[in-house]
Length: 304
Image 1 (tube, one colour):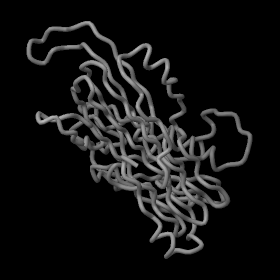
Image 2 (cartoon, helix red, strand yellow):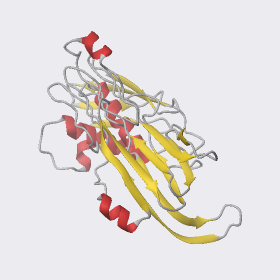
Image 3 (cartoon, one colour):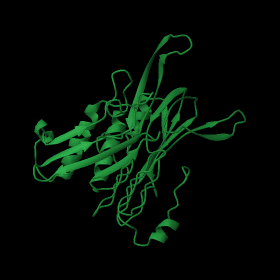
Image 4 (cartoon, one colour):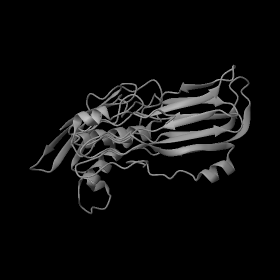
């Protein structure tokens, strides 16, 4: 069994699974996975081990208590110096993204279901911190959240819209609480219709989250699946990639939209808005009418 997926920077995650039916042992070999990165998207090897046992427990329909013995028949091989097993001399941070990507690769290798949104969409804002010019540390605060998206479809079920997937399982704070405790307005929070991949079983839709600053703030977003779509399986169509925007007024007073890419930190002014559009899940199986699905597959604009 083999599968490959990619981070948005084109770093590959490759997996070959070899199963010995007579002994019940399996080898999960990540040979060919891309090298560790200059930035902090590397993740400790423990994240890969956790994703493997999570995926196995999802696929095995047995009530087995979680314990170390679950991994005894599994040999996990991850090349040293890869993005999933870095040396001790590079930064690590991208654990939520790595766990989602490894999980998707495993489920793809076994043909279990299409890809889900693929990240936690870690979104936050705050004020204060260290001034980069003077070095002065200013008292401040920070708020962060993880945003749901579309889950992948499978044989016999549609994906779910606006949901946390796999290793991410958190609630978003009520808008009233956010607006009371931080100087922002929640302008939009809705399902991003039409973003799930079409198929015999459709992928779930992502969400749109739009926040307006009521005073100068610093916003940050850490996300994936902004370049590579959550893939469909068994002839199902891909889900839509996510999009992140900074919406502001220019010096002429005209509204302009700025794409933030998948990862960014921006200092916004009062009245500026940041919009996060999360990915949809992939579809499973060919749509009943493939041509109709392609013609009707009009991905929504963020303003719709």
